[in-house]
Length: 100
Image (cartoon, rainbow, N blue to C red; front, side, top):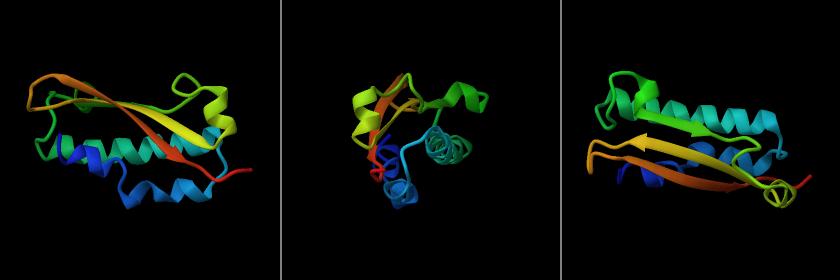
């Protein structure tokens, strides 16, 4: 999981800092993070016979408050089935998004 934690804040998600905080941005952000996790799974870094068993990413109204949205915070809930320590780990990742 050492590879996943800094990678979730990698430059590949920095683009959100220049976007308006909206549902379409949340979907793009979740897709980018999921694509990274899919690569980890394919490389053997996550457990599971299928990608759905290895990780999930949720970035929507259920993961952030109205205060988060109003203050330009996009919050994703990321769960991974780590190979070590052999348990499911959940991260809460927050990215600052441009103000309207």
